[in-house]
Length: 226
Image (cartoon, rainbow, N blue to C red):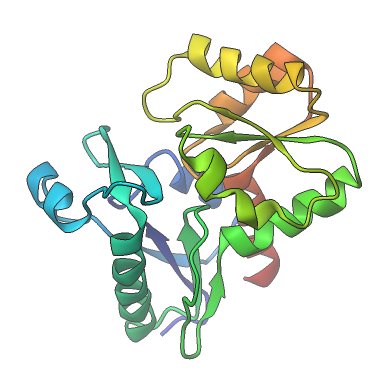
């Protein structure tokens, strides 16, 4: 088995046509990839039954192969994520990237090197901002609270706005970006793997601020390992 076998895991359905081109752009030549998704092979009814959103529970949103977006209850997703990580390691992946910026606790692999964006992106952003005001763009308004703990390393509490990468219009994305600028953000972090370079350009052009794209940051860190 190749030593450069990379596994990627999305909480949606794989392969992710919006994310994999960003990874491919940065990965070294010769890296083989196996892409899995928590929702692979599941229809909407099965997804709703297996990953229900319960009152008061944290939620996640992701993309299916047909381009539609779904909202998932976070607690049910965590168990499925660990099972898929085990599967990727079993087939020989020695480096695995989780393609979700949601905060999970207790994930692990036996031998594989696991890269979790919720553990990687916040410290990098903390170092880059160096006390400046960070603006966090999330897909869903509910995530402003549920995903906020991972930004505790920032010197200043972040400000938030929401716009889904899956079904927001460019105008809605622009409005969310300008809301962050109005809240005195010095830099904007696109806190979802579903945001693309096109989304980053829209936000950059609307605000004139530096914009950090989480999946591109993850891709650069992966490139350093492989």
